[in-house]
Image 1: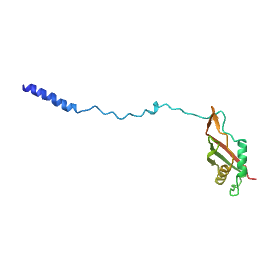
Image 2 (image 1 turned 120 degrees about the vertical axis):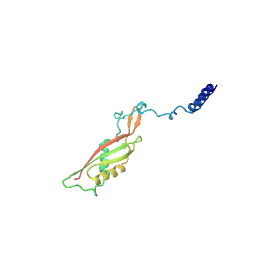
Image 3 (image 1 turned 90 degrees about the vertical axis):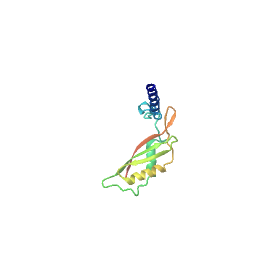
Image 4 (image 1 turned 120 degrees about the horizontal axis):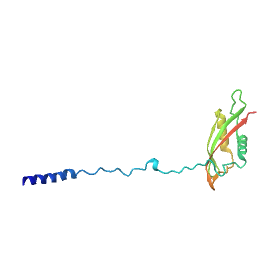
Length: 146
C-alpha cells in the first residue's frame, strides 16, 4: 500500500509541477517581412505630354529677363555672362513651387529666384493617361551683361 501511495503522490505531484508550465507565448502578430510586401512604383519619366509654359521655356526665360533686377549683382573679373540653373516643380494646378537656383554667383541666383516668383501666368501641367501630374522642371538661365 505504501508503494501505491508513493506512486500516486508522485503522479499527483508531477501533475502539479509540470502542469504549471505553459507553452511559450507567441509574440503579437509580426509585420510582414519587407520582401513579402508588394509595392507599386509609378514613374512619370515618359508622360503623354510634359509640363510647358504657354509661350514655351524661351517665353518663360524671357519673362525672367524682363523682371530680374541686376543692380546688386556684380560679375567676377573676366566674366561677361551670368549663368544659373533654375529648378522647380510644376504643380497639378499649373502653379510652380520648390524653386531652387544653382550657380556660381549667389546674388544672381537670388535675383533669379525672386524674378521667378514674380512671373504671372501658369504652366500647363504634365499629363499621363488623362491624369494631371506634378513634374520637375530644370531650365538653364544665361543672361549677357552687355
